[in-house]
Amino acid sequence: MKRTILHFSFLLLLCQTASAQTAWVEAGLKFGFGSAYLYNKGIANWEYTHSKFRPCYRAAVKFAVNFDLSHQIAMEGSFNHSAHTFIYPATGTATDETVIQWNTISSGLFYRYSKSPIYLEIGPEVDFAYSVAQDDEPLPDGQYYRNRYLSGMVGFGGYLWQSGIIAIESGVRLHCALTNFVTEEGAFLDYPIPQIGAFSPVTDFTQLFRSEILLAVNIAIGKSSKKMFQQRDCVFGQTP
Image (cartoon, rainbow, N blue to C red; front, side, top):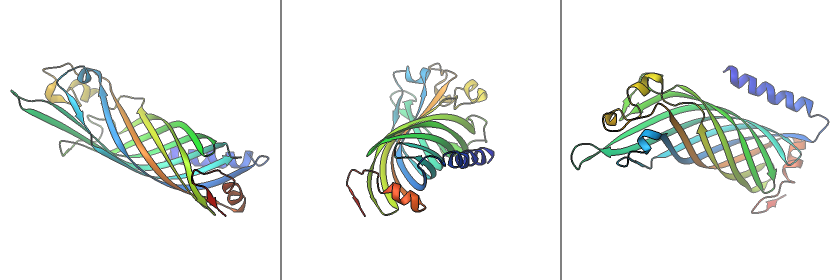
C-alpha cells in the first residue's frame, strides 16, 4: 500500500513539474495471456526433465502521464495467475509431473518511449504472491516460495486504433524476477521439485520468467488530453 501511494505521489509531482511542457494524462485497462517458466540450473541440466506449457493470465489498470507524444511515465497495478509444470521420470519408464501455481498482485512504475504507432517500455515491478499451490496443495505463506519479489519488465507494441477519447493498443512483455523465487528453506528441500533431489542436484537459485501478449484500452482524461490523444498515429487509422 505504501508503495502504491508513493507511485501515485510521484506521478502527481510529474504532472505539476511538467506544467511548462505539453503534459497530458490517460488511464487504461489491460488484459494479458501468456506463460511462465521457473528456471533452475540444476533442473535444466538434467536431461530427463522438461516443461509443459500452462496458460497465465493478467488483468491490470494503468494511470499514465505523457510528455508530448514520445514519453510516458505510467503506474500499473495488476492481478496475475501463473503456473508452470515440470515433467520428470518417476520409476522405471513412468513419468510424473509437478505443477506449481501462484497468484500475485503486482505494482509497477514504467517508462515508455513512443515513435507512433510503435512503443518500447521498461521498468521495475514488485510482485506480492498471496497464494501458492504445488500439485493442488496450498503451501504455507512464504515458507517454500517467496511472497514478495522484485521483477524487471521490457516490452514493445503498437497503437492499433483510436476514436475520440478511447484508444486500443497491443503489445508483448517479458518479466524477469531479479530475486530468488524459492526461499532458503525451500532450496534446502530441493524445491521446486523435491522429488528429484536424490537424482539431480537442484541449485539454490530459481528464477521466474513470464511472457505475455497484452491488449489494452486507454481513455484520455481532460480536453487537452483528448486533443493530444487524436494526434497519435495508429496502425489501422483513427476517426475524429
